[in-house]
Amino acid sequence: MRVLFIGSQESRNLFQSAIAGHGEITSEKNADLCVIEIAEASTLFRLPKKFSVPTFFYITKKDRQLLDALTDFKISGIFFPPLKPEEVVKKMFSGKVQTSTANGSEFDTLKAKIIAKAENIPPLPALARELVRLTRNDKTKIKDFVDQIKKDQGLSSRIIKLVNSPFYGVRQEISSIDRATVLLGLNTVKNLALAVSTESFYNKNFSLLKTTGQKIWQHGFAVARLCEAIAKLVGEDEDALYLAGLMHDMGKTVIVDFLVKEAVTIEDERNQLGTDHCAVGELVLTKWAVVKSIAESVRYHHQLGKDTFSRVLYFANQMHKNIDDTEALEDTISDCALALGLPLEKLHEAVDPVLDSEKADNDIS
Ligand SMILES: [Fe+2]
Ligand SMILES: [Fe+2]
Image 1 (cartoon, helix red, strand yellow):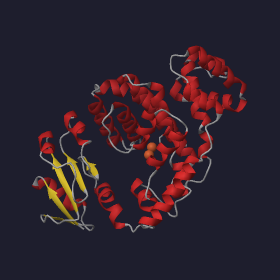
Image 2 (cartoon, helix red, strand yellow; image 1 turned 30 degrees about the horizontal axis):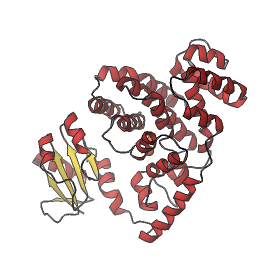
Image 3 (cartoon, rainbow, N blue to C red; image 1 turned 135 degrees about the vertical axis):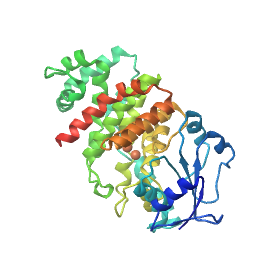
Image 4 (cartoon, rainbow, N blue to C red; image 1 turned 180 degrees about the vertical axis):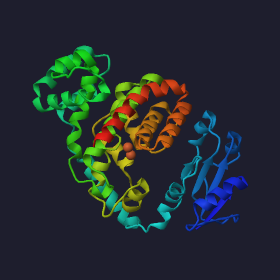
């Protein structure tokens, strides 16, 4: 594989050693892939918006104007320093090296089947549907729903178990929904009920995605709380972002039924199915009549979008994915602060409680 590199000699050498054994850097225009180093926003304005070969940007200087301008470009991926060879190889070559299991027309049939399955996904439980419809300020209605939650033994005991986790920081053990409501507020109990009522969708085998239903749900629940915490800082709708976080990987519950071999990255999903869990997630949420901003942010949760709402989801997801890699996590938090125009300490204050509680959970299990 020949890769055209446009940028400094130093960066060129870094890419050359990162892709050694998989490809070589060339100066020829007719290369298979292209990497362009972007050290300042003005470089971007000289570039075309579309490229004839798959093109990657290597961003060596981060500023907000630059990140905002990026979304106008049709590119295959972005790299930031420090470059990690495995990541570079995976992003640049995974789609090319692997042979697809399906050709164009097979993809169309498969895609039609996946869409049909997404459209026929069981409806959200009635209570969850009502919770989704609730608006933040409708306190009386929320009170009615909490009363309903209390009547459901299974749901109540699951919520009580969750409120006693370190994240909520309550000193005395909570043993009733009433007590949880007093200590944590109606809204928190409402959101916990929502989280618990989506758990059953993940009751299947996810080994081809190299994970478990419990892990995907736990990840969604953590991303939901991160979204909620960041939403407060940027003045976005906390409830809507909580829901987006909770449901963002819902598409995995559909696509897993169509995979024939392991799929670890979304490129793997696209290679096998011609679609991915993001696009399918949007279909499911649209089917469930969830508001458009949520469904759209789910569709684009693996790429940095332009609007604040979808950026919050993107970064919340990245933060939780990087939770075990201190350096990568710190980078993600500072990128998030930059992209959303937030002071870094404020963002830390908001997300650290969620991340710390998740780390504590990881250590136990
Ligand atoms: Fe995802
Ligand atoms: Fe995710």
